[in-house]
Image (cartoon, rainbow, N blue to C red):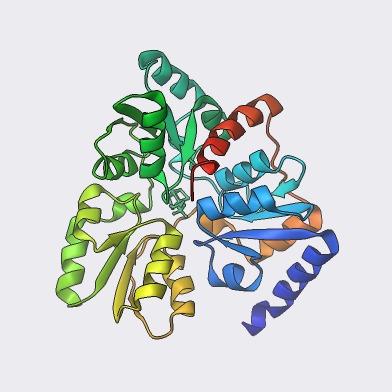
Length: 307
Ligand code: 13P
Ligand code: SF4
């Protein structure tokens, strides 16, 4: 750490001076996650933190849709994202007008959107979900609408993985996470062969045959808790690379096998641009107020469900 110590010290000093907090997603590199992050977690945990934050400024160490979610939930705060290039292939796969067309075609079915979407998509949907509550949200909205069919966009794999856990029929959209779609069931068999006894954990954005072959699936924080609670001798996390680094730092007795895929969007966030963002107060997230209120209704519907 010595080379980055001055950067870390300056970021932490500016946070105090400006009354700012850093919300750090589990995919941040350990320097950000462990040394400057004030709140750490998966998408759902970070959204809950944003809604409760008392500081004046939120710096989102994550991707753009996460910063938008924070702004939607905390409109009176200044929300900054250190890089405008921190996008997401799922968020880029669908637009608000796409959702309007879906609703015209299926007016009797509720539309659930994964939080990995832009504010204009959320504004068109009835409720949001994350990887930690997708099945619960689908079942709750189906009950509320008294329907056996729910639309879940934009991640086709998450939708198929949820469909495997419920009797609800799910209509989806051909979006995918460019990081998780690269894992295959073949990878899982090869890992089991090369590392007998290895415990294989997968994120629900992976294709369904990967989840079927894995030992456990869950949100980024659920994967971290699984390792913490079970202390497996050898584990592989089929997800973004920084997860293993961050979970390994908390679990020194566990061996990590590391085939992983980098998320180029998450990796746009660096200590350097976090510092710039605090000095220059950029890039501020701004959302049209009418759109924000509609998007907030969809997120609030999710947050109101029992934890
Ligand atoms: P989590 O909500 O599980 O943290 O997932 C966010 C994400 O972008 C996964 O690719
Ligand atoms: Fe989007 Fe996938 Fe990156 Fe998550 S890992 S931010 S879903 S591209």
